Length: 247
Image (cartoon, rainbow, N blue to C red; front, side, top):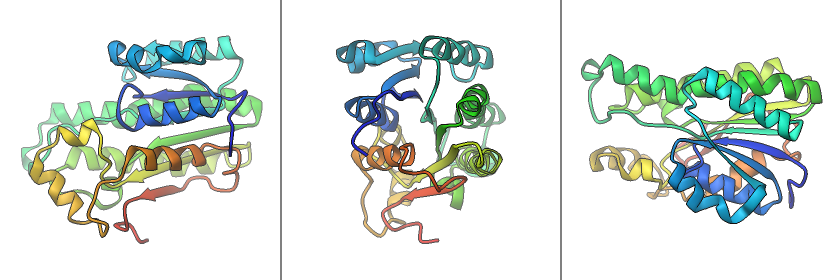
């Protein structure tokens, strides 16, 4: 797995965190990367140095029409999409009991974390089917497996992402396409930095290694999952949890 030359990847939420790290990794491995995010300033600061290898697209991934137009434009330009990695995500309000969850905030978290993955994969999959090849990775969370107390909206949205990967993995398994999820525990990202200290402590206390994962560790695993070498695993959720997930 030394190169992704001649492969085209779309990554959502690549202006920071895991998405940013994966984008840098794929670009270093010769992929053509199309980057979806709303933070134009951060995108240009991170990717202008790559020139034509990195295409910046300002798109609201919770808007199905915008997503469709952006992906169809990428397909028209590059003739194919080999890889889709959905990294965009928000926690919403955390460290609260379920009866305190605001319905509007719950809807927002579901739109960003789950519906965006549905919108992007819905448009990309027909192209992958036509080419008999594709790799889709939805970034989920250990919270989607276990259900983190104080994080109803986030945990539920990531559980939905994990289930979607199972369904899609089964549906396209005979078409040269793999669809998997990645469930990190706590990765040191701006999203985690913005969370209440008590919520972060609750999560890291569950990790036998007693530390957050690194962005490099996340990018290394993600690039393997979407590589041609990972050809016999689909509908699966890979753990990145420092020993927290042992099942």
